[in-house]
Amino acid sequence: MKSLPLFFVSQGRRALLIGGGMQAEAKLRPLLEAGFEVHLVADVLVPNVERALTDAGAHYEIRHWQEADLDQADLIIAADVSQQEAELLAQLASVRHIPINVVDRPSLCSVTFPARIQRGDVQLAVGTAGKATLLATILREEIEQLLPAGLGELAEALAQSKDRWQAALPKGAPRRDWLRSVWQEAKLGLPLQPQAVADWLQQRLPAERTQNGMVVLVGAGPGDPDLLTLKALRALQHADVIIYDRLVSPAILAMARADAERIYVGKNKGLHSLPQDQINTLLVEQAQAGKLVVRLKGGDPFIFGRGGEEVEELLAAGISCQVIPGITSASGCSAYCGIPLTHRDHAQSVTFITGHLQNINGNPQDSELNLPWTSLARPQQTVVFYMGLTALGAIVAGLLGGGMSQDTPVALIQQGTCPEQQLLLSTLAEVEADLQRQPLASPTLIIVGTVVTCAPQWETRKG
Ligand SMILES: C[S@@+](CC[C@H](N)C(=O)[O-])C[C@H]1O[C@@H](n2cnc3c(N)ncnc32)[C@H](O)[C@@H]1O
Image 1 (cartoon, rainbow, N blue to C red):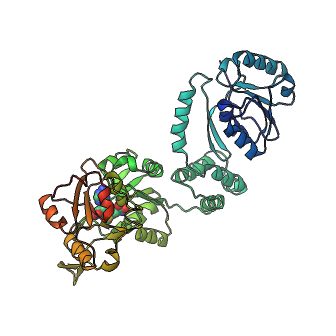
Image 2: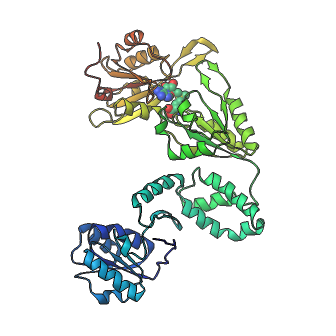
Image 3: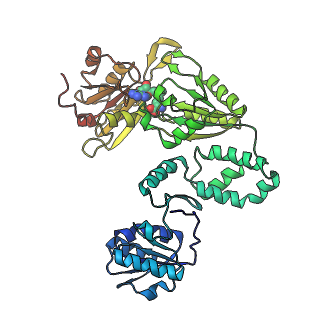
């Protein structure tokens, strides 16, 4: 069966929906969303249909349909009807030249519903002429992931500013190239508010545009590549250059555009491969060369990731930048070990804190950990130490000195969410000795608090 996809102008048109069951429910929402004046006639209504009709203020009658119902219709949908009635309705619609969709009976339809993707006025439709509706649904799901929210607002903003960009750019290739470059950026994520999208586009209008590229700070999550966000994945797939840290796993880098340049700037403890000010300069230089730069960081860029400093530097240099958050290691590691960070019976708050030792007098042997131990030691909270492995002794001493009980459970998680993940469960009193027996390496996260007893292995832990 051949067909031609067309968009039905629904405003001010009447759709007659026959049926009030589950099939009708599935069709009612798109009809109402499209702005049809819906008239529903059904012997019975399922509660969801009744609620949707009432909410929308749509017209409905509980009775059997009759031929006269078709008279004012611009579109007929027959749902939940018998084969005999379906055939009769298809015939009546054909005589009147009214498009009809008979749910689940493609041979009786003159129009079919495609699988739809909608972002405001931007709509994509996938149809298979009724041959493989499930395939259309799967394709829709895949395409859905590729399109940023805010696309409808972008189309609106393009319409609003049409006079300006059309005046600035001749028809054909210049307009297409400009819009393509706008689209490359839009795919990484658009602002959420319509006005913010309009402002965003304003800065990219041909007259305002600089030759600079942009920098996207992307959170790569704690290690498991499946924990990447859709936005992060899109950014990786469009980057010209990726500047990445030690904590970014090879599996995540492998998801990036194959020909993207990869620059490692990772810092190992005490072994800085590139100082932060040089990383900042590198980011600015790469963006000034017109590239789309992804600054890829472990976890979340704004949690102990120096993302804030990089954003400040970029903005000061006039480079546009965006931040795509990632799952921070505290969330990832705790979830993969079955430890809820808050729990009604254990902790009403959670603190993320750095356990990084500060050098004093510029002497690496001479370091200290100055933290508010009394408040960290209070009960009914969870404390998560990032970068705390080297300072474990100082952490234990600080918490005990602040008044925390020796029995307080502690979890050390090495390479959380990765296949190499290791978990050490202990108590404040015993954790140092336990670590001697089961040494762990960086990156390791330390979780302190009674939530640790929720870990499935807690009851069977050694010692
Ligand atoms: C410089 S901080 C970066 C934190 C990162 N921005 C985040 O949001 O997770 C590095 C510390 O994060 C923790 N960390 C990061 N990834 C980890 C992982 N997969 N397993 C355990 N700890 C991790 C470790 O404590 C490590 O020393």
